[in-house]
Image 1 (cartoon, rainbow, N blue to C red):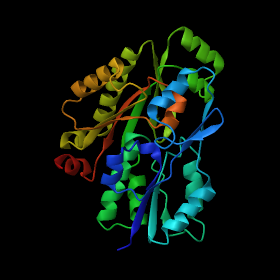
Image 2: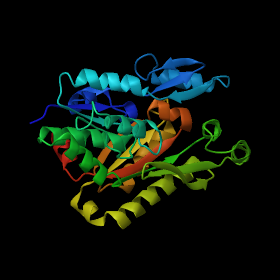
Image 3: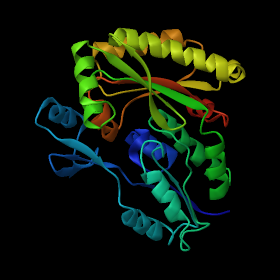
Image 4: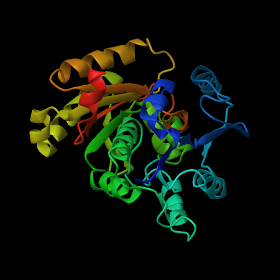
Length: 305
């Protein structure tokens, strides 16, 4: 049986406890730039300090992907100890880093030893992929088999994101300055969706309360239409994420209560802070929810422990 390293980025919002529980071999984080300085979540930037920067209108924030040469150097070092590497990172629909890493994995020195699944996920969806990969490694599957499984099941999930302000989408070029100005004037709250790895517009509402209700309804409808049998079997899990600096914020607590009430018959996976490099684009106060299908039965085992 091959000795496989599980390497990830920070798109899955792992806690230190989850990092250890899953058995992550190496994390190669995505950084972000604040006023010209590079920062890494959990290393030289806390969640609380990040949102203090956002409050300052003069703050300039952008994201930065790890260089492919640095990634290759990490692979070379790991392959001195491991036979294979499974490298799970942010959706190719949200970043070019995934396609760049896939191309690099086909270099002669890495071909057949480094496997980069294009599983098109982020946040709690990618966290599920990390758990699945570790389960498959422990079951004796090869890196190629793990990559094939994650790509086969990549679309068995979905997420809706309500953004509290258009300011940061405007900065990232996802809405025009004119649209952002009108939207801000009318207090419009856009709801975005991630299906197939890409971030697309879903709906516009006039308040975060309306956004919460619309996301819950959309998630319910999607599960009923796409995975009714899986829902009956209890293998569709509800996940949540947010960009609230205050974990006790009424908006967040109300949303958690609403989701748990609406999906009382569904197992609840997690409610995580969004990665800070995602918060650079959503800004504060964003709320997200959706689902994942757990065909391997991993969550049942986790919740028993």
